[in-house]
Image (tube, rainbow, N blue to C red):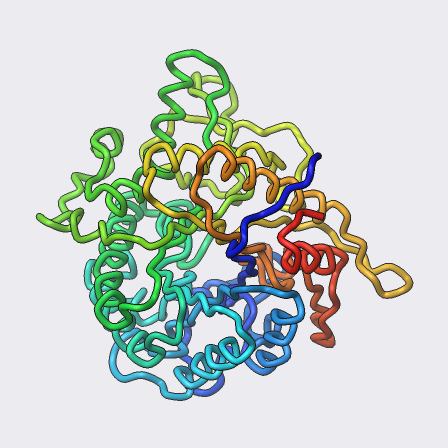
Length: 465
């Protein structure tokens, strides 16, 4: 590989999420979220793990930000816990919660690091779920009120405001397959959630534009790279159908102001989409300064023959209920290795493919890789070091793939490694480690893995080690 050098000004960062790292679940006025309820429900998470303590970032945030600075990062992507700021999802703010994020942002600025704040990374206040959750239109209104309060408090100190992280997961895993909080399995509700997340994004985006005009506006999508198993028309149609649910259900409203017609037709047997009101789709299309792209692996589909055992290897957790609403005739095939500890195939070329597709379809839309990384069963060697060569290889190849897309014309402005710290990996509890910094959950000690040292070389030189 010849030298891979990134341009001056390319942003290097790392990312975290509130419920995955903060802990302090019942401290300083924080209310319960759907993930508190879900993780405390027997059988929902591996080993019954919860985010009650997690990486204890709520108490160790200053030390953790020193790690961010030591890594030479330009930006730090974190999420704000809605129930910490507004415990029931409505009403006055909890000042202790606002103050926590205010201190975080101020310290990042003191360190010369851009704060990239995600308003919603899945921790919906439980009271709002009890009132209907994302399938209810009122939740979008509540989100706008929350946005007004927290953006009003943190103002232009935040460099980039991200409305949502992976609304695909919130809608389909939360309300269709039930493998994420709140654990519901209601296909029509999942599609209503898709719409109200899109609507909330557009409404909140307009609030951010008004209250923080100097800030950048973004959203982060986990866009799927979907490949048909053969060149047959049936397999091509299976890929088209999944692309509509996975990608165009969000790209359409957010970037074009309309849902794709084939999505509405494919799902007509599930819902009539009457929850979409006149003008909603145009509201969703608030102009973005940057589109956040999360990428981990690819997806292989084919048309199911309806007779042989159906494969459901979509990489999104085991459930008797499908996340893929209205697509019972599509099966998801296992893919050749190597795989990460999540069982996800490692395919850097998929990232190049995705970025070039986005560049082709939305040529004037700048992008950032807002999550990319890998979980492996890291071992602490006798000398206390963590030699995570496979993670370094994963990162090197995916960052090179990003550079390939840029060389071919894609406007990619930055890359955020997932994750800064080992953390609560949702349904997998503490069993899967994504961090470039190891967390000993018994002592909360942080230890740089070899990948952290490797990443620091990259961030401080712009040259791929």
